Amino acid sequence: QLNSWRRLLAGTSGHAEGWALYAERLMEQLGYLDDPADRLGMLDGQRMRAARVVLDIGVHLGKPRLDGDGVWDHDYALAFMRRNVNMSDEFIQFEVNRYLGWPGQAPSYKVGQRIWEQLRDTVAEQQGDAFDIKAFHKRALDIGGVGLDTLRAALLT
Image (cartoon, rainbow, N blue to C red; front, top):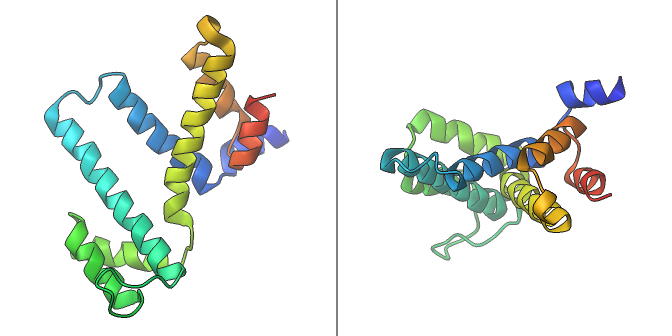
């Protein structure tokens, strides 16, 4: 029953959001984003997520502002997002507040995506011609919302 609880109710950003970014890129690789408008939508989403990573790292590590004048703070983060994303101002304010209060969450998306991709590639290399991507996805998702190290250990044993 523990596995059911973990699969249905538990989770981490790196696992869940990493899966989402992995799946988004997989859709592109499978040809489902061949329409230019769909591809531009995906790229706009990636731009927004990249800006959030820069904001998260800048604010929480006390990095210098991109203009070299001081360190990141709330007002600078707002101005940065307003310059670099295509969202309503209300959403930008929400996003900035979200990342000010949740250190490391934005980078966890991209880290998770990379780990999902690495795991898939490693398992595919290990299995060779016997690799079945659907079986890989089922096995990985059946593990539940575990941490990325736990996911790696479960899939590579």
